[in-house]
Every structure is written in structure tokens, then in C-alpha cells.
View: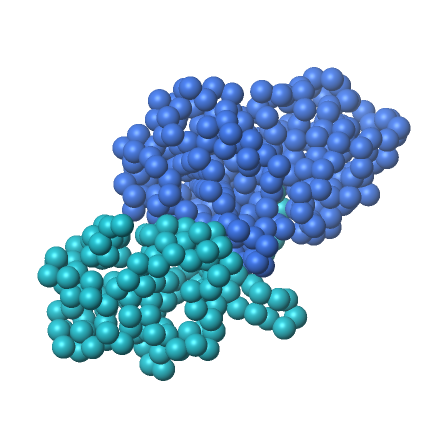
Length: 155
Length: 287
């Protein structure tokens, strides 16, 4: 099995980070495999880690009493699952479920937050990347709020 | 209501008069989604309707009205005119209720198409949203008819939900025929194992050389703006990105001016435009 640090270096989320920073992150990370249908985390649980997806697809879903579980986004290999670890109260807002077999690097949030506090350069580098993920998902969510496919287009 | 089968007293259309509808008979109807059907039509005069992918006709439900509808059929089959219609009002509602044997009227084909042949020798990226896949289906069929003439061909399709996807029985066929097909929906339940998000999220999955790529985009205008921008962000020249614009088309031949978009008459100058010609107008308010 490849060392966790090597997996992080090759992941788009960490592209451009100095090796020194990657080595710092490595101490907080571990390789995980999640089977289809299993959860990476569930709504309401403490956001004590986040996941760097290497292979597979993760669905973020929420249970609605009248509609059952609705998938509100999917996350693919090359992306990350979760930013609640970064923002108080550090609690998951949705379920994250493996659609198929998923390989990921799980990063311990408390460990990482401590390192970010101690090393502003690391904190800023991570903040930039998390902000990018949040920005992209916010824009996508805004577009979907408009329900553009529901408009009156006849064909 | 559409004219019933057997009421064939309609006069033949004067040859070459684009304002007089040709009577066509509904040959078959397929329900795509809860509000959308695809119908195959055959001209009563037995003559085919030659069209280019991206063109539209003015489709008439006799006694109800006429609407512009993109052609969704195979350009290699001019004997069979195929339209995919969504029920969004009186005329389209009537069209969506046709049955085999009913008669409709057709004027056209009108307008400027996708010019998919400009993509020969290079890569093609098709980005469709919702019913926007219908005007692009002829592109896909044209590419498949001469697959070797094109490089990598990606079809990126976004829909509101899995139940509202069009041509679901064909998407796997297109993949098997060598196209790179990706699908994403706005929202789904757990039975859906595909992607959930917006169609632009699919673009990183598409492999293409921006310098030799033709991008063809069709869907709601907002989605087209973002998808076209995503293509140019990837390096595709705006002149090689084409979008299909929907406006209030009535005559279909550039006479009435209902579909004017500043200096363009969409029915004759479009509906397909290069992004560098039309892009700035898509963000002008109240235009």
C-alpha cells in the first residue's frame, strides 16, 4: 500500500502544496476504504474528520419525512467531502454515503485544526483550498435553486 | 385538438410557399417523461423533409395554433420528421396529446443549424440541459453516422431529475458506439447511482483538445451561459462554441420580427449562433 503522504501529493485538492506542508498533514491522515452503501458520516455527528476521495463516488443526502432520502450532491474522485470540520460547531449537516466502493484519505480534524493554529502558512493554504470547494458548491447550489430545467421550454 | 385521421380534405401546400403548412401524419408517439413526448411524422405528399441538425419547424395543431419546435430526429432519415415536444401551454399541450394517425401541419425546416461538420477532424463537446438534448440528438446521430471523421466526442447531459431525462434508452447505445456520455441531475433519490449537481461539473470529465474542439450547447439560457463560459475557460475559442437561442418565433422566415434579438432575427440568423456573435447579448437585460 502506498504511504498516505504519497496519496495526498497526487490528489488535486493538495496540488501546489509544499512537500513540507504535506508531511505535516500526513501525521493527521489515514487511508480508508468504504463499502457501497456504508456511511462516511451521518447528519448530526461531530465533524471530526474530512475525506479526500481517491476512488469512487460519495453521495451527500438528507432524509425528508415525505420524500425519503434525497441526494443533494455527489462528490467524485479528486474532490473532498466535508467542510463542516473547518467551521464551528463542527457538526455534519448531511449524510455522506458511498455509492460504490470508495477509497479515501481520512484527515483527523482536531489534529489538522491544531496544526493550522500553530502554522498560519498551513492554515492559509488549506483555507484557500476549502474556500475553493465551498465557492464551487455554493455556485452550483445557487444555479440549482433557480430550477432552470423547470422553465417553459417547449422543445 | 389535432385533426383526426381520415380528415384528408386539407389542400396541398403550394410548392415552395414557406407560410403554408404541409400536412403530416403522426406515425408513432413515445412518452419520454411525464410532460414530454417524441413523435415521428410522415408527410402526406410522400416527400421527405431534408434538414440540418439544429434547425426547427413551425409545428401546427390545426385549429389550436403553431409553435417552433426543434427537430430531434435523424438527419439521414428525411422521410421521417421527429419532434420532441414538452407540454408547456395550449399548443404544446395539444401536440403532446397526439396519437398515431392524427394530422398536424409543418412549415420548415427553418433556421441555421449547428454546423456539426465544422467539427470534423477534431473533438466535439455536446453540452445539453433538460429538453436541450432534443435539438442536439440530430448532432449525435450525424456524428455516429460518420464516427471516424471526428475525434473524441463527449455528450454532457444535465436534467432536473432521473425521471425527467430524455432518450434514456439511447444514452447507453451512444456510449457503446464510442461517445463519452456523462449525465448529471439536479436532485435524486437513493435509487440513483449517478451524479448529482450542475452540468458544468461534468466538463472536467470530458477529454478534448481545446484548440481543435467544437462546443455545442443547448438548454435553458442561464445554463448555456455558464456552460459556454466553462468551455471558453477550458480554452475553446468563442467562435467555436455554439449555442441555440430560443425567442418568440412566429413566421420562421425573417418577415415578422417577433424573434428579433438586437441586430439578429433568431429564426433566420439562428437559432444556432457562435458565442462570439451572440454571447454579449445573452446578458443584456430586457432584450
